[in-house]
Length: 90
Image (tube, rainbow, N blue to C red; front, side):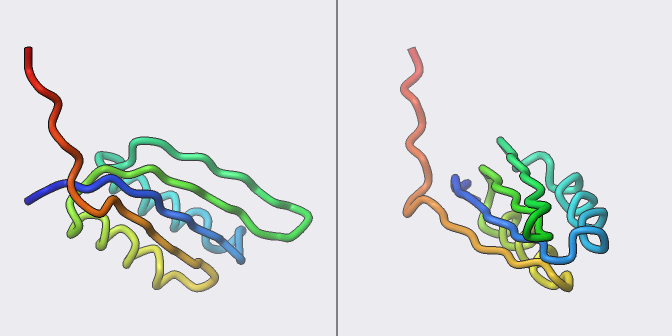
């Protein structure tokens, strides 16, 4: 199955409740997470996480699906239109 590169945005509205569950899910999918930036926005009572991912559509769909069913968690994803080109060997 072909791999895709993408960005996942996560907004956690109920930080104290949902953050441990979100982190557990992200740990399970660590193999397809290339980079992660998380910002606790205390003044607004939310946390925002941005992920750079590289995985199959099934893997990334499972990740976003598990996150999206958590109460107080909003998830959006954007992906490359096609799989990345392989670098020439040489």
